[in-house]
Length: 118
Image 1 (cartoon, rainbow, N blue to C red):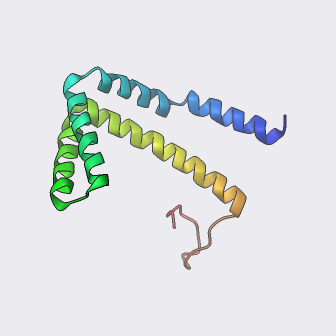
Image 2: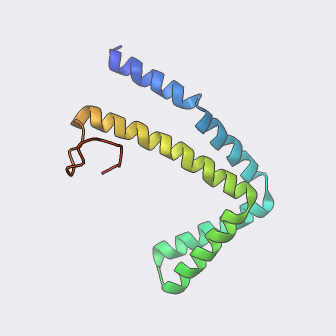
Image 3: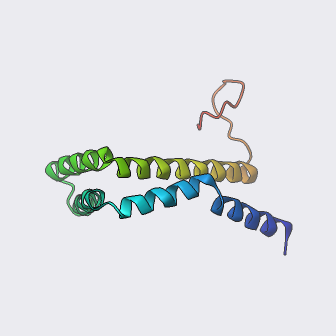
């Protein structure tokens, strides 16, 4: 097995053991166990599908309202936060891989890379 594949397996293992993934899975289980949160989530999903098929202003407004209601639920809020943190970790990993392959991005004339994401 090549060294790169070994390192990829180590990264996969580290992600699987990460607090971010543990927190996401825990928050997901709590969300699934909460009937009110699931009702709000299902309504949001239904409206999201409607918006993809026919994104009328009315449907978009309903979707926004459904998301706000969902995000106000404590279990949903915890799930969304955990999902955001896990996604941010994966995004950071992806950027690191991309820079390793393509080299650092050159942008503007700021003189240093402060991680602005541009």
